[in-house]
Length: 164
Ligand code: PNS
Image (cartoon, rainbow, N blue to C red; front, side):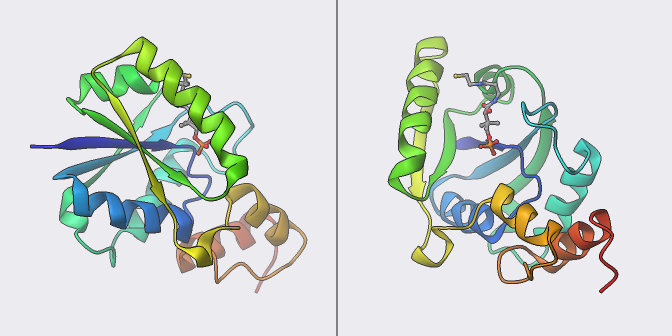
């Protein structure tokens, strides 16, 4: 059984994340979405809210029977080892993602050589989709429905005090 961990802040989950997840489930028997409890930047949503939004967003996800949602704190490789995963999945959008991801992958490999980082490319339509950009757009009243599942768009509007 090939198990992968897909770690992230998921604050909130976007169509970009779901795109990567869909690809990951073609490759792995089980993909554990691992929500980081204490991301460096203060999250908009609590851990519980991020998990709930993620779970709700998985309803229509292809091969969602292969997907689990968990939370973790500390190192991703420790979580991966604990759950028996041999891979960490990360999405790559543009060249700008690469440097940080490359550093993280090499450090993770140094920490846990048995866990391999697998980069998957998002589809072209999601190249510019990031949680932080979407939060900024929503904060100032922009429309985010094309970038996140409806539950996330609604929850963001609510957080930012937009009534519609
Ligand atoms: O969605 P994000 O914020 O880009 O995800 C970043 C994440 C959670 C993958 C990364 O910050 C992470 O793995 N954090 C846990 C601590 C850790 O293992 N750091 C990497 C060691 S090099």
